[in-house]
Amino acid sequence: MARLACPEEAHGTLHLVQRGRERCACFSCARDRVAYLEALREGSAEHGCAVHAYALMGNHVHLLLTSARAAGPSCLMPGVARIYARYLLDEYGNERPVWEERYDASPVHVRRYLLACMRYIEENPVRAGLARSPGDWPWSSYRCNALGADDALVTPHPYYYGLGRSAEERRAAYAALAAGACQ
Image (cartoon, rainbow, N blue to C red; front, side):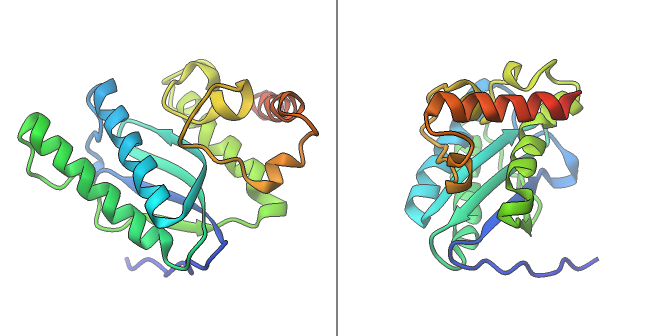
């Protein structure tokens, strides 16, 4: 079934999902996830995409990002896939494609859905039974957004800043939102 095109407009916020080919695992160890995050960090800087939330699952990746340029994600995602494929080739000799041909992208209406989308992404490991709470999963942005951990990949969305005047207030408000959603 054909996917509908998602407009990748400058300054548009998108929820992206990149799935492993045939639902196969994309990551076999922590080193793989670190390599992917590094490729994503470099690519997002190069292509003007601010990553607000992410979760690396076993066979897919969730991203919430805003692109400073039109078609930023269209440049970012294939670039990250190429870098990660090169890593897998060098590390394991794997020459098979890891990802499905195209990622899924959905526009996010910031005022209505941004914080809910962030929570959805960061709670994915809990729903999948990989962690008891979002803070237990080291491969998501939750520790940065709710707990204040340093994460060079994450750029807070301007709407996130509306949660409080200080970083502590924002983190506490976001953690409370996430805790309310988990109950």
